[in-house]
Image 1: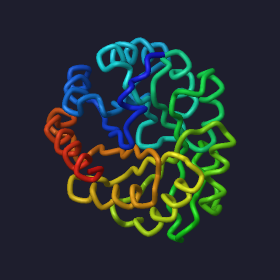
Image 2 (image 1 turned 90 degrees about the horizontal axis):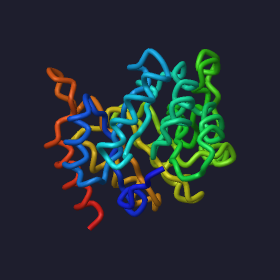
Image 3 (image 1 turned 30 degrees about the vertical axis):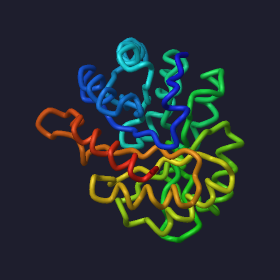
Amino acid sequence: MTLSPKFYRDRVCLNVLAGSKENAREIWQAADGHVLVGVLSKNYSSVESAVADMREYAALIDNALSVGLGAGDPNQSAMVSAISAQVQPQHVNQVFTGVATSRALLGQSQTVVNGLISPTGKVGYVNIATGPLSCKQPQGIVPVETAVALLKDLGGSSVKYFPMGGLKAIEEFKAVAKACAEQDFWLEPTGGIDLDNYEAIMQVALDAGVSKVIPHIYSSIIDSATGNTRPQDVAALMTMTRKLLD
């Protein structure tokens, strides 16, 4: 597996979606490599077709590849693990219950594997029932500190906090950021992040002392006509990031 030195060195790394291989390359260049480029497993009919195509993506962007579920779809969990085992990407998106499987199939500890936990409406508590069966049951509400420790037990690298709804869950997010900082765990805020609220959300994570933040910025910077992420918006996010880190 090729590791991007920029990704592992930097405190903040963007995560955005690619609409095509050309778009992936444009995004990567716009961010000067400080980005993970998401490709969704849900867009493929089989593991084999996904592996073949994602390897081509990876070759264009120094393996700054993020294998995605597709809107956090728990039914994609097994496919993501199977793809990742063969592709060996730098980043894997998983539901809470899929973390250990992905880590085991990867066979190494360097790839970042996140675990999806969700807001509950109550500060300090999160929902971990994000798997294909558990998501259909009553919420699995646990203290956020426990959720982080469980993810570490499972071999996870980070919390994927979704859906945030932009600033709607910001008070809950503060508690998540605090727990991640205290346990030296990475944090991936996701859902409704745009050019207007990006700095406010990131400031919370950075002020809490989170060692690595991987914000996911999706639909707000995608051109609806082409399906591609706008490179100029990625560049704008990088400018804001540098300002936050100064």
